[in-house]
Length: 216
Image 1 (spheres, rainbow, N blue to C red):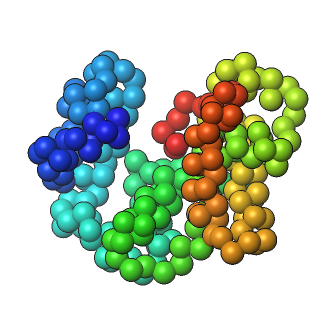
Image 2: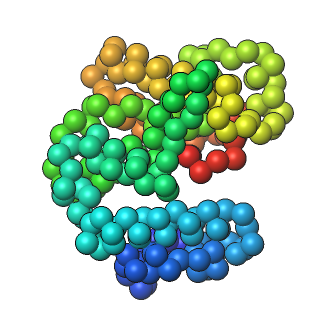
Image 3: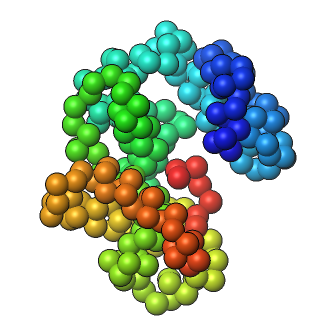
């Protein structure tokens, strides 16, 4: 899918904010080489429309404005976190748990692409998804309840926002913070290393936690 978007940008240029606002499932499906009836396609289209709406309404139709207007990387992530397409807050025992995986990742990626010169990358948390806790589990950092491990390895889908799914993400964030405190790396840098580590065949051969959602 990433290759499809790259090819589209190389052949026809980037979408404008107006084009994103008009995005539909059929259009994005053609770009990423998927069936328009695939359940992800309406979700992709809705997320792109949301981005287009905010860029048009809040940032004058200019995609660089969010980064150029932000005072720091966490502030840029906070801007994205307020958009529906980046919403990522779970509830655990009556408490709101704001993970903001994609909002933080977008801010970090813009920093890595040298869009603006914003400080405080080290104030981001790890980008909590399903792969980082999987790597921690396989490497013996996280020890799960045997029943949960069995469910994950059997391919059972976890409910997004369920206690076990929230705990997996939260424990991964905490583990990354502890590693950061014991090293010279930031949580974001540790997250990137773990994500790349998770592409190794050893990790792919074992069942990872999966939860249908738009958060990651």
